[in-house]
Length: 400
Image 1 (spheres, helix red, strand yellow):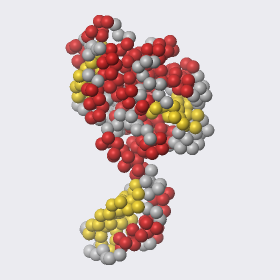
Image 2 (cartoon, one colour):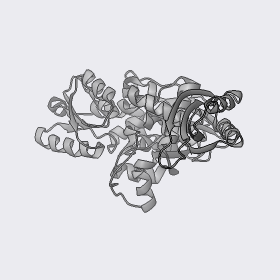
Image 3 (cartoon, one colour):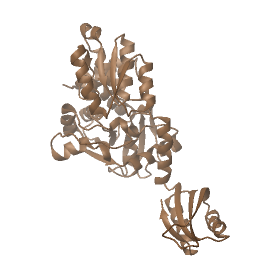
Image 4 (spheres, rainbow, N blue to C red):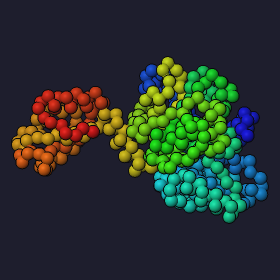
């Protein structure tokens, strides 16, 4: 059972272990609200997960410590458990989905834990960890459906109320629900008027589905690059706590998450993983009512693989109208490319890539395709350029 006393005890246990992460004012995230960022992406191990993992391990008996611990994770909980076990002198075995970012896997190993990669997603790793737990007798450190883990995550709620006592709403990423259960419980216990909203990726909305249908049911599949919240099924305890303490659970698309990541990089020089940025995406795209309110967005982690980050930045640029691809059908004669490029340049666009292809079966014999990638200011700027090209008599056949 989670109690406020337990959350305060967790805060006491963790005070010399974790960072009290900064709360940063972010006025450009949504100009209609006062947005603040709770930067758990700057926590040790790069994620909030160490809070719950360390507190859970701190409560183990001597006998349990001697046998060691086992956990399953998409990467962040793995690092939290590995670090907590290392600091406590306890052996740790972690089951991680084979699709987890390489950086998370390698960081987990660097903390001294034994790692087993499991084919599939988090739920598949969970099943394997349960099998190994029965064989070894190790203590299973659940990533979210555990009172001690939830209490550890709830310490973020205490910090938020200390840093922003008059906060109107808090937006929290949701995977299995451990983070939001702890944060919502702590905040609602001390300030019942504060709204708490959960956010999931639209391709992994297991908690939202459970709340909407008033029962827990595993999703057949999850599809999102936000691996930290790609959970097929929420926990029993977290489902009950979200039902009781959370005002609403909403979803954001992968494109919206990518835009939020790009915004955090450009405006605040912060690196967030997909799971960590869903709260910011919800505020940016008005998925919850933030107008005129003081809102804290919890940026839960920053452990994104650099190869994924480059793709995410590119997607974010496309979504924000900062990068656009146009394909035009032209007559294959001199001067066409020069004129099109001139229109783009005169309106302030910057051509970064050009491809010229002779027409296929769908074009005239004397026709060709011209594909242009250009940098632009925003979606309004893209529309201005598109309209000017069309008014000049050119046929745009593809516009991304």
